[in-house]
Length: 278
Image 1 (cartoon, helix red, strand yellow):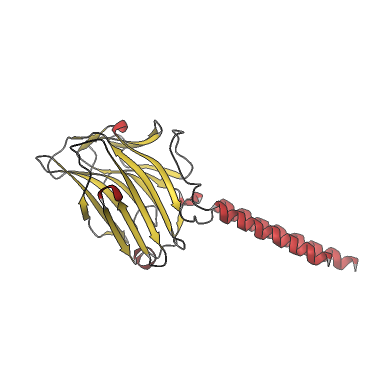
Image 2 (tube, rainbow, N blue to C red):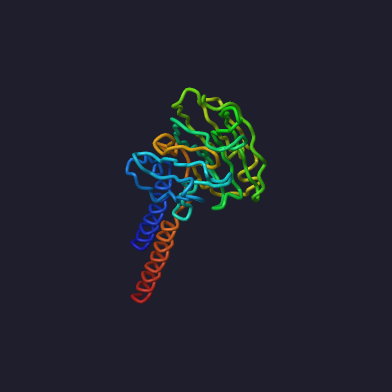
């Protein structure tokens, strides 16, 4: 009887460890108000051309600095670090969001230039399977068009930008928006939206269907050319995981495996000792 109790107790402890880790890998732990002015462990900062287009956590926010000389495909982004356990499971619904404010900009290029502030998700580090929504500025030659666009890629092939509607008025800055990405696992539906301008798109059958993704990274930042923005005039703030479940962290998995092995060793020793005594 005592042996049975001992086994149940050990197994109970192991299950409890799993439960604790499962609870830890929930929403909330990845929320970031950026007030510490230091990128949290969940973020990897990527800048293709930092001299021309940079992104930095300062002044209690994440600021975008651009001088207009970057190329159309240059990115400056904060990307979640999946290797550290910051990837959202597609086996559960999730919703993430971030605020963005634009106070001023200067068009320094030529007609046809475009610059965008972007929020999205993706399966891989390189964005070969990814989707995003953006507030885009476009140089018309006689002024700047403000639009909301979306795009997604499958095996590194872009579907091309889709116009979702007009963006916030750039004639009455500052303007603030909320980028939202939400996923419905039962429908395999990824929804990207900016509610302040009633812009939204539903991407059905993409995440698990076309990508075959079990987990998604998330990112925000800027891309483009021909526009100058100062950091204190273009910034992201208050990233929030409203709901969702993270995939187990590599470190946590190691602890679970080690715990299971240790429990197995203890059990074998217990059985061996009991056999020897009998």
